[in-house]
Image 1 (tube, rainbow, N blue to C red):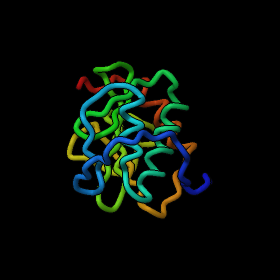
Image 2 (image 1 turned 90 degrees about the horizontal axis):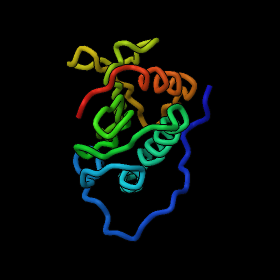
Image 3 (image 1 turned 45 degrees about the horizontal axis):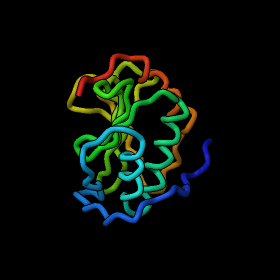
Length: 149
């Protein structure tokens, strides 16, 4: 069983705080690279920040060549600047992790989507993330054809 999610420290800039959208989702301008994703992560309020930072760390560990971007106020993770295999979004009561080809993962992530291939993992405030399973999903997802965005 993995340890509970804990906040990690990251360097921050002294820019004005991002506007928060529904669910505590930061409104961050579209951009590419780790810097824009880190700005997004630091703008997330409360317990969701720790979850998002840990997800970013695990995704980077599982796929060190990951290409990062923020699109539609969502951090996206891909194999290049146009092809993404996953992302996550702040919802009022949980963090919604999307695997764009999740129906092909083994085991299939637990939460369904209205889109045939997409599967979700919902992480609530007091959940303990199964990091071993999450790393396995990220590694599998990075090998599948991503979504062109």
